[in-house]
Length: 168
Image (cartoon, rainbow, N blue to C red; front, side, top):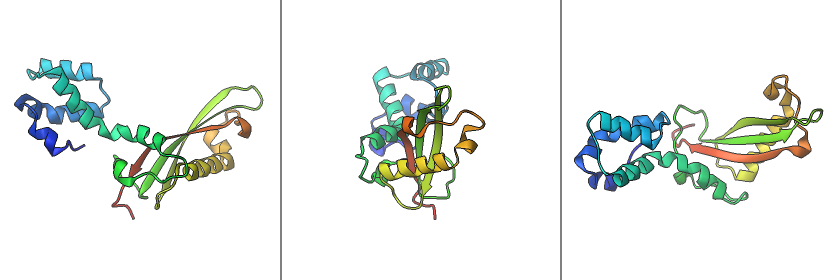
């Protein structure tokens, strides 16, 4: 996670020293309160407004979820606005889709996450279509012995996406 150079120039010396630790703790998913208390215990502290601005800059990767939800379903997302994946990927684009529905026999609610990977950029509607067709074709595999979801109760939600320009 790289923080914008302009932000680095405006940081107080204590914040510059704390930046690698803040990046690590944000990656671990710790709250801002826990991060700031940990920094204070280590002897580094600075204004809370500066601290929160720095944490928001470090967390910019998480903003892709809101960005992707705001892209109209027929439009392609801008790859420049998508974060790079944390690990290695075999495709340039990776989209996470959440499938929710109800079982046909008992009506129990079910939820499944499907990742759609592609070498080309896809619209949200194309991603959702691929995820749904994959899920319905292999529902037994994905549900692991649980009750099958009724196709007419299924709702799709496109979640986070990543873009790896270096992938084949």
